[in-house]
Length: 380
Image: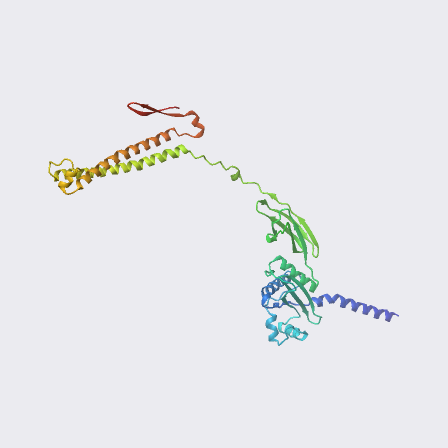
């Protein structure tokens, strides 16, 4: 009887030892290789992105060591004379070539619907049946740092290995386009006020930032393999002191502008008058030379008889030009003086708006048989 019981106990112990050792054998020992996923010409970028995301997932998983090599399935298959889809013997040769007991390999192909690709991922472990999973996702996921592609790689890895090290956190906010930061690094933007992230188990600081709002953050404890959610409210940022204290713009003082404009115009007009005066002096000298040049009996160079007698109208033209220059001199100098005086008066009587009520300027015209004039008066 005792012998029978002893035998049963030994059998049970052996079965327990085998059961306890199964996960270890499934995970294997030593570094694991991720062979670059194969693809067709249309999915090369997607295959590279998923390969990099899967490698990042392995680096972050406790108990797994990634072999930092860059082996490619598209190069190993022809080098080892394998069929396009590796069979068991080929996979054995690949493992021997890589000197490893386990490696991931697979393909990325278009479909099953437009704008989608399908990843067919395999885990080969020496001495155990090969495991494989498939997952379809959007073909615009190419960046290994893209949160959506990270979730795809995590899902494939966990389904193949049963190793879950992350938890899911859904973040909500009324500010629909706020940026999400986890432990100081940007992880995405809210889509209609919601974003779901896969985060390693443990404590993390989640923060929302948006233009015009004060940042809001919260500490989260992420539990591996569980789903949780958090709602963060953002408050409007206070207006800056400089914006609140900005003084109103100063009103334009029209009278002052007119005064300076009149003085400037007067200077220009007066300068023209001075130029005409210089021109008159030169022409007057030419007139005197003409008077000395021709007979003293000639008194009017512009008469038809004189022009016929002298055979030229040049002396007449000189005298006419001198008279025109003289007239322009008087007109321009007078107009310039009037403009300068007007501008000076405007500047003298120009005051800020709050002081104008104390100042009044009156201009009264007067007319008579001998002429007219202006009478200027005011109160101060």
